[in-house]
Every structure is written in C-alpha cells, then in structure tokens.
Length: 269
Ligand SMILES: [Zn+2]
Image (spheres, protein in one colour):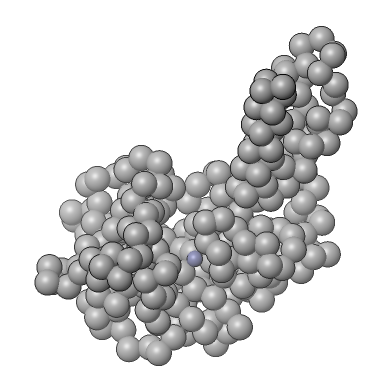
C-alpha cells in the first residue's frame, strides 16, 4: 500500500516538474506511461529512451511549426540575437508573440549600429502554448509579451563581450554603488523573503573577470525604451539612477517580484 502511494506521488511530482519547467514534458511523460507498461522487459530504460526521442522531436521539429497557430513564434537565433543558455531552447522557454519577435529584431539592429560585436542575449521568454500559462518562476511571462534579457559586460580593458556572469543568466547582482541604499533589505523588512531568491539560481557563477558595462547596457536599455510597443521595463531603481535614464517606461516592479539588478525584464502592449 505504502509502496504504491509513494510510486504514485513520485510520478505525480515528476509530471508537475516537467510541466512547470518545459510545458510539454509532463504530457509526453503521461503518454509514455500509457505506451510502455511496467511488465515489459527493461521498462525503465525504454521509457527514458522513448521520452528523450519524443521530447526532442516535439521540441525541435514539431512545436516551432505548431506554435504560430497559438499566436507564438520561436525566437530565431541570428548573428545578432541569441539565447544565453541552450536550456532555454531545450525547455521551450524561447517563445514570444509575433509583435515581440519583431521588437527583438529592431532592438538587436539598433545595438548592431552602435557596436556590431554586441548581441541581444535573451533569457526566459514564454512557453509556446496557452495564454495564462505562466513560465515558472516568472508568473507574468504567460502571454507571449514578456521577455528577460541580459546586461552587457566588459573586461578590464573595457572591451565588451557577449559572455555573462552565471550559467543561468540570473542571480549575479550588480550591487548599488551607494551602500546606504538597500532595496533588498527594505523588501525583506516588509516580509518579502523571496526578493533575493534568484541568487540560488545561478547554476554556477562564471566569467568572474568581467564587469558590468554601464555604457553598453545603457545603449541596450535605450534601444528597448525607443521601441514604441515596449511599455514597461523593470530594472532596479539604483541602476536607473546610475545610468541616468529618465524614461517613464522604467518602473520599479515592487517587492513581490525578485530583484532586477541581474537582468532586464521588458514587455510590450
Ligand atoms: Zn521577466
């Protein structure tokens, strides 16, 4: 009895985990449970192999063609636009609506005219299907209109690079220059414990020799601001001040979100 319950709960947990991280993984997992019965020889091995085959086929060949029927497009990686992590693509977290797709290309072009070496590097966008289905843990990324992009960094000789500071692209914060200012403490005191939470999701810090590039990140932010369709941008207020940005599109996201001095979030109408 206990054994059966444990088995059911672990299957349920796996289904939820796959659905939350990849949207389609949970359903594929269920289909495989139906196809391969547990009394077949080497059933576990067969299940894993079949899962990898169907999942890869769906992710790379099928969904890019299906998503447009649901109003989403896979972000096309070009010489100017790229995902920071392959996992973003493997987990189907690289879908946007057609309007945001055009906006991304415009931003990348404008970066190129400033410095052809700088690419628009994106992090989590949206899943391919269903408005209202959030891309965990970003609850607002649920309609194809939102995306996170990386800051730009440079080395000690001020040469800009497309490399970032963590494997996930999140969690390495650009601390306020003014130490008196401490948004995360303010939020923590208000009871919002999750504000700093992304620091546990770096999946490894990398490129420790790099620094935040004020100049290039400002150019990137201006390119985003200048897009008519973009109506909201989230970065920490201390960065807005430091980069001397005036736009009313840049808002403080509030303590209920996570801190935004490790990446830029923006959204279109
Ligand atoms: Zn976001």
